[in-house]
Length: 80
Image (tube, rainbow, N blue to C red; front, side, top):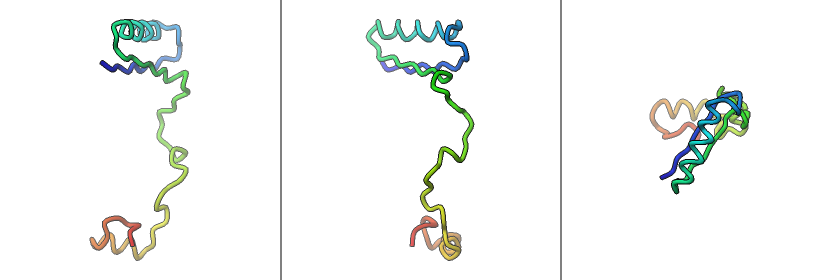
């Protein structure tokens, strides 16, 4: 069995952190594939933002393409 444990606690030595580590150890000892992600140690940012999209495909869409798309003449605004 594959198990992925996600820990989101600011203190790695907390009770939650201890439970996550023990869980991973016990599952692995039983022959399972157990992985652990500690979101605080990964400096995970849960807020979505423009910085996640540095290269945007189809950033510019011409007015003619947009109008054709709205009329149903294109499947996607960037298709020509």
